[in-house]
Amino acid sequence: MTAYLPGDDARARYMRIDTAEILKRFHFCERAIVKAQAGWLAGIPLLGAKIALGKHLWEDSLTGDALRTRVFELRYPSRLLEVGSDAPVVGLFEDSIQAPNALAFMKALTEVYKPQLLGAYRDYLAIADAIADGPSIRFLTMAVRDKEAQIEALGQLTGALEAVSSEDNRCAADAWVTALQQRSAQVGALSLEAPRPVGPSTAPSDSPFAIPDVPARDSAFHLCRFYWPNVIDPTFSYGEGVNLQLRSAVSHLNEVWAIETGGAVLAAFADRLDWEFMVDAARWTYDEARHTNMGYERLTRWGFTPAELPLGTYIYDSARGQPPIIRLGFLHYFETKNIGKKNERAEAFASYQDSASQHDMEFDWADETIHAHYGRKWLDALRERYPEEIPDRQAILEQCDRLVDAVVASATQEDLDDIRLVATSMIEKANRQAG
Ligand SMILES: [Fe+2]
Ligand SMILES: [Fe+2]
Image (cartoon, rainbow, N blue to C red):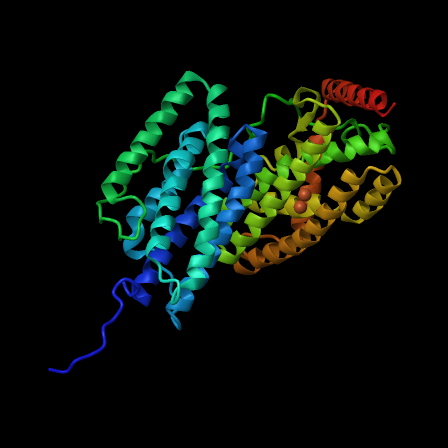
């Protein structure tokens, strides 16, 4: 009998193709949860939740991207990536978007989906071979840190949302989470093992998901359509000095429409464009969440409470009833058309010794140059892929102009009186503070 040297069983537990199979399963679950979080951004009222989820979905997209790249490396030269026998567990993750209300969605993220991803990654790291599979260990270690922090943030946000939710919504949310847990027990939670094959989807809900026409907004703020008088009243100047500091911070805060729109666009085109689009759209959405947060942070530091701050909907409203390509047009056009003024404003803030506004404006400018590229790239890609359905970029931007002009023209005296009062109170308070 021929004798051989012994192999190391522990290190060799998973061979290359087995490893690729597990990482592929993880990728599809991350992909599903990125899309669902994006789709829900307009439907979740809490501003803090929109900002947090914008960040989470970006982190998840990076993990999803690293997983996908690694699967291709391990399966080289194959570039095939199919859900295949992972359909039961991937389907469970895809159902996340069907939540009956925002609280149910948030609760399911907190109690079902993120903990399953975290648990599966920890299990993988416990058995992964640090020599052969070092690259996977590196990005999954980061993913574990992300998921831990996400679950903690989600726990607080879900608690805050629960506190302001109706009894009906709380009951529906609990029932939803219970149904998902039962289904998860049926197919087997996301793990290193392949899911159990089950019959046709027993999804607890079969109502198709749709991006809301009216965004859910945080009632702690002063909710309105037009967030500063100059939007509807050309005699009210954009201003300089304190007025400019306020106007710029209120503009940043009101980029909340861009978080909602980035998410809506990601969800709408996720299945019609390449994965690369999801990665770009996730970053785009996260950037808009940071811009919103920049405004919120500056205004809070100047002593304003949410009730004193206007949160408007007119740009989101302008795309009501329009196909998602128009929302992509808005995101590209409205966020980048003022790009030339940003450096000028940063200089004005420097001359006021307002380094926070200057700093935010400079970083915002850098993000917008990336977004201008994203907008051109994906509007053109859609036009090329679906020429019958998608107009050219110029026609889309012209339509965006017409749509927003119509909403601005619909402003009433009541809208104007309301926002004038809010802006004047803010300016007076700021002037008192500036001394
Ligand atoms: Fe922005
Ligand atoms: Fe932007």
